[in-house]
Image (cartoon, rainbow, N blue to C red; front, top):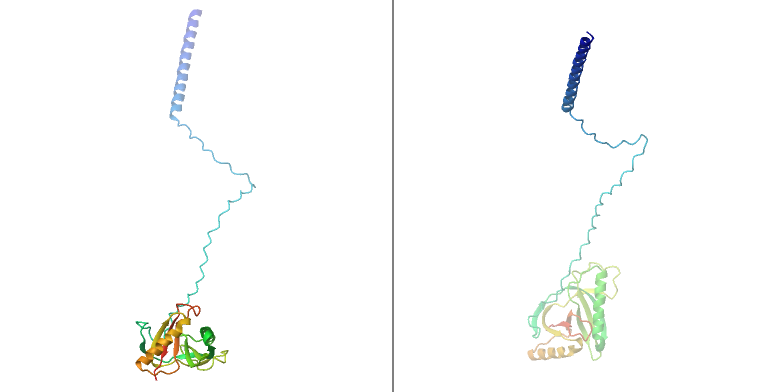
Length: 251
């Protein structure tokens, strides 16, 4: 009887243990299944920690100033108008070696009279031309021609002359500040025979000898007051680039 009870108790224990194992196995299986079905949590993204309250903000990086626009360039002053060459009393001859007959028109001109001996003739005349240029500029007048020298009287020692500088118009009244020896008049006018001297002024006597020979050969009687037009004054009396038109007015 005791053996039977022991066996029965043993059997009950075995059944309980089997049931317990079965139950535990189910739990394990369920736990395993749950572990397989529950998704793994996403990795945590680390975020920078906010600064504690009251911490001053870091200074902002300096920003570059906007580029300065270049200042507009100042307008340039207009270039002065180029002046063309001053006109001669008559157009240049086609052949300077041959005298030609021309008709010249009188023009208003500033005038200055003076005298010189033959040795200083070139210097005196060019000084007179320079004075006329200065006085005309002072009066606000515009030169429109080459300087002229008309010989009023000559002798063995020297000559008297009237230097002239053609201008666009004679002033109506006398300009203020003009020197008292500067007057206004007209350049020679009418029919003339023109000769060209292109050589140093020191050699001009030979040109006048050729003029006298020409007039004698042609039987032309001329007025005494020849006029020289200084196309190129040169640098001095010995300058070979000097060019002078000589006008002889027949009577």
